[in-house]
Length: 190
Ligand SMILES: [Zn+2]
Image 1 (cartoon, rainbow, N blue to C red):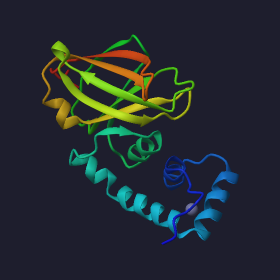
Image 2 (tube, rainbow, N blue to C red):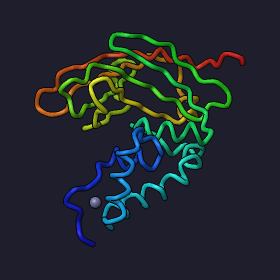
Image 3 (spheres, protein in one colour):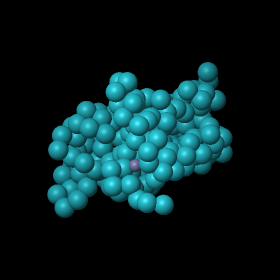
């Protein structure tokens, strides 16, 4: 199959598939391109195949890492129970899960002006490394990085303080924000 020289960006394709494209013109352009391009059509089919199984994968605890807003919207529309924590740089937020939660999403906001990609590192007590994500693409200056953890995994965690750090990827590695999740293992009764 010929490789497309003007590939629809992954993010746009995902938004199109999740029906999150706002304006009609953009949808028309994407559809026109897909009609003519076998390469991009194949990429869309691949995404769609992933999507039908998304809710199931979540419930099996197999969705984790960094996701896009389009994927998160899609999950919520499919009835996945998302517990969301939103943090700005310097903020400390208490974190706990409740019965019925499927997924814990930590939304990290920062000023992403001039930044294309970031590194997210998560550490526990004594700087012990818990997770690290390199070269995470940033969805624009006012965007957010969405870190997803299966609720079943969080459920097993003891009470602890998690430190999250966002830095720009590449040579400069400027720190964009530090955040703290104060995780409490005891689940408040609903
Ligand atoms: Zn194409």
